[in-house]
Length: 286
Image (cartoon, rainbow, N blue to C red; front, side, top):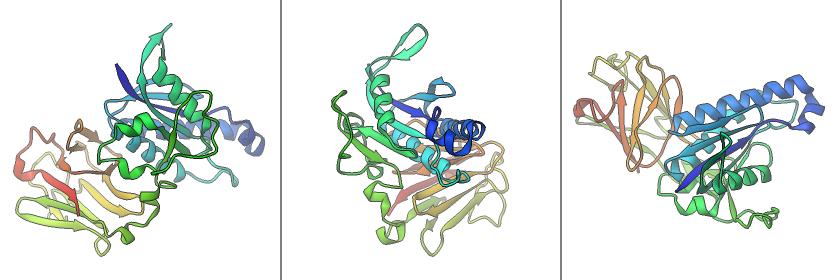
């Protein structure tokens, strides 16, 4: 069975080690690996290998893998600079077969994802045409419409596209120019996250923009911010925030953040399938 694989290379950068020293290069690789793992978890991925040099994960759908790659790049780009050098993180996404040999993940999906990652520059992510063909509306805007030119892909016969808010055409344009806003519906009220109101607060306390009546919600549970790369949900709660995007597996975000895409539901402290529907926050884009 074909699986969507995300491969991340984050160690062994000799050029970086020469510039900043071996110890600092190792620390940078570890920081990148940690943020990549957190992004994978936030988007429902499952680790299949995590070493000093690389991280491999599998996803149930390509949208989640692309979103995880974009999220990982965003987290890494927010790290302190490395004396003018980029952080050692290169990510590849591919859909292909996954198997295990001698206890290690293998198969065409893993091999191709690693080859794609190896073609990346630092702080860059690429996805194969096979992965892009599996995308729905949730993540298609995160992928450049034209293949990347000038890469040596002749050895593995694959076309690749760049992904991530730094280069992909659809997200290179500021949100304000795209006239995009996020609509939140709770009970009988509607709140918009937009240019004139870029932050919306959710929680049990009366001072929040959206007041959640469920006792499992924290007083100051979560916030949604309108940023250049999209609309980001930040969880600040005890019980976590559940996000169910239409057509995807529900995800738990706890003391972490998640890029909101498509349309779906938000449960503050409870799973959307288990909570009172009156306390669920419904979201979609306008």
